[in-house]
Image (cartoon, rainbow, N blue to C red):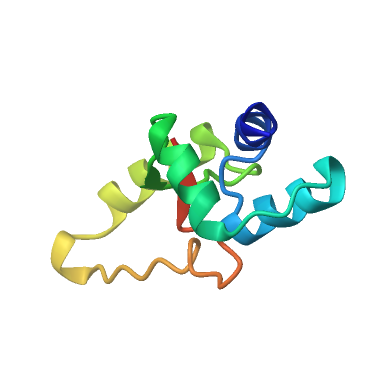
Length: 97
């Protein structure tokens, strides 16, 4: 069962404990509490870390061109920044590492 959990984390590092519990129940026919999963993973050396994802459609050259354009067109006191790219309730905040 522990090897199964490790495999789950390797495939899906942002999986929640209750999702692991469901997979254990469904695939391995093992019913354990969330605390048991947590302790097993901690003993194995896993911790929860903040994760962030880079957008798939991100184009580095386009970003560089935009930065150059902004630098030559505007002064620093003319700029206001608001980043909503990572604001999504479905965006995972933590993952297993």
